[in-house]
Amino acid sequence: MSLASLKRSRTSSIDKLVSAAAKLDESASTQKNGPDDRIWKPTVDKAGNGYAVIRFLPATEGEELPWVRYWDHGFKGDTTGLWYIEKSLTSIGQKDPLSEVNAKLWNSGVDADKDIARKQKRRLHYVSNIYVVSDSANPDNEGKVFLYQYGKKIFDKLMDAMQPQFEDEDPINPFDFWEGADFKLKIRNVEGYRNYDRSEFATPAPIADDETLEVVYKKLYPLNEFVDPANYKSYDELKARLDAVLGRSGSFTPQQQEDLSVTAESSPMKSVEPSESLSISDEDDDDTMSYFSKLASED
Image (cartoon, helix red, strand yellow):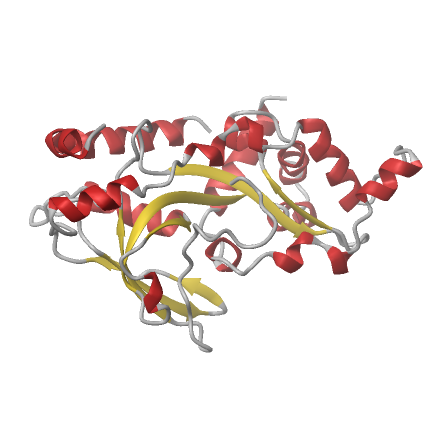
């Protein structure tokens, strides 16, 4: 789709995006070594506070939505000291071994089992293209396009902008080049967790003139890689890793055991930078735990 076509079709965008989000709720990155230079992360000070202004961008050519949603897991085995850091197959509509384990724990009726399920729960991520308007901590990022990974709290703010609750509020499409709005990202440290409640949209206005937008549009990153089955491990691969992390690897051959026995010191968690998904509280607990209950009821 050309920029001109995008501009002509934007009047129906809000309804399409809201409908797509509803469908995602009804249905249930490529992993790389080292940091991904495409991904922007907000900077916080020693107190855990931060501020930046970003603009959510529309879908790139060939993709329907300006976001993707996926889940992953990240926890350390109590007895083995090994880390389990893997994308969940539930992101692509497939059965996942850890989700099955958690469903049984959650539905056992034992509080201790529920605590374990919470520790091992799915972590919800959304990914969108953004344009960095202001980033005083890293001014070199300003005026550039990045990928931004965020959680349910910020996604809810996007949905609220498209579906305002009060008569004096007009709906806006926050992903629109011309009639969207800058998003003032305000991060606070509340009881040890990052809090985004004070983040808000500014007055709707174009990002720039159409000539500049043409350049920005051509720099958008495809999002489908985050939900491409080719970028996910198989059920058997994940189960083998999970068994090793949980100390249930007695059935493996010596070579398989050696391949799986990564020490905590050399764990990939050492190279994972803290992110919103690791520092939020339990904002997606309701979604995750209802999923566990639903999965168990289908057995």
